[in-house]
Amino acid sequence: MTRRFFIAFVLLLFCGAEAAYAAPLEKALKFQQSHYFLGKCELTVARQAFRLDNAGNFKFVVVSKAPDWTVNIYRNDDKIYFSESLAEFTETGLLSDFLVTRKNRSVDPKTHRKSDIDFCGFKIVRMSGARQTLKYMPLERALGASRQIEALCYGLYKMPTSGGIPITFTAIADSNDYFSNTNTRGSLQKFFDTSKIEAVEVPPSFFILPRGYKKAVSVRAVVSGKKAVEQSESALETFTTDDELKKRK
Image 1 (cartoon, rainbow, N blue to C red):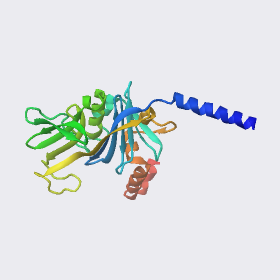
Image 2: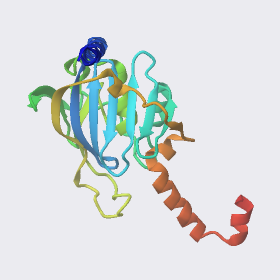
Image 3: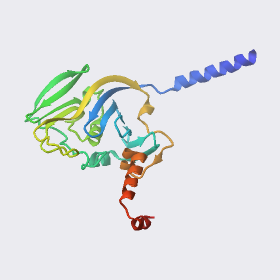
Image 4: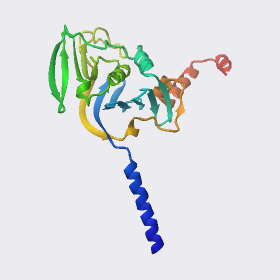
């Protein structure tokens, strides 16, 4: 009995020590968003940390945090990742401009009417123009988030931010839909939207690249995933002659 009591006492001390040294939770805002190309996304923003979980077809994750703000893109199914500097990520974006057209980073305040509106219990800004409307949350209203958060949002979504976190962007299309080739010229299109914002608390590890993942050859390899790459290679082989395949091998 004494031995059992001793073991139980040691375990209790150990668990208590673990709880005592557990890192405190960070306050954050969680945005349920949708992008015309990336699909559904869950963005989590703390004062000095950023995470995006793609809930659409791609299923990748992007994390970045102070002090160096290295951008880590990874996926849990293939356990692969790719890292680059914030400057590189902002300049090139998550995807090429061929796939996701880069919009102007800000809308012109001279041609847009600015107003404050309530959304999900938070104050956001609406910039209304003749051909487009942008809604965004200024960084000071997003827990006083660092300016790097805005840079990450722009590199990821390539939507106007006007210095904050994009909430909604609608514009009148000036060309046909690239993928379907349908005539959308002159119609009002919603390129980006947010359905919900909520205050949450998350552990600091939420914004860190998981251990043990293998580095991929490029951002594209991570975003696409192993299955998509294998499918594209299979399709390529279908239209490649035997001689060409031998040369590659």
